[in-house]
Amino acid sequence: MQSPASKLTHRKNRIIAAPFDQDQYLKSVFIPDKFQEAMDEFIRIYPEIILPETALGYLTKDIYHSRKLFIPIRRIKIAETNYTVRPCFAMPYLTGFRHPSYHLKSTLHFF
Image (tube, rainbow, N blue to C red; front, top):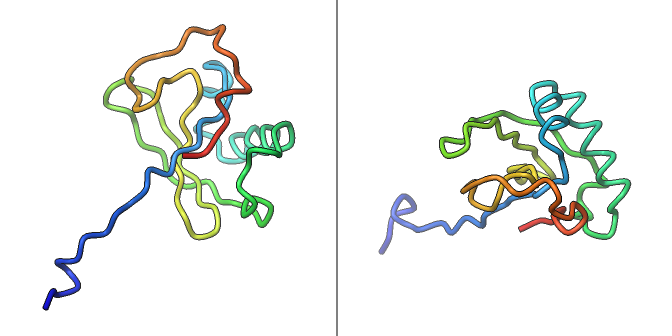
């Protein structure tokens, strides 16, 4: 019989790709109220692709720095689940930067 510590837990990648431009993101990521204001605006603009639990509210959490791109990454909590908010100017897995002309609406989604 397996002990609880030996059970494997499969964690989904919970990532939100939000349509920040680089200047807007860097100005708001360190200020929780400003970051939440920007996220609220994205939620208002793109309601069809937002998690239903977001209507109950969310909390801004900690910041970590990407080792690949050297940018700050903010985390938020929606309905007891933590999500990483990846700005759309950063490519998936934070492997590089997107070209500024990349279409913003197609990038706001949840994984």
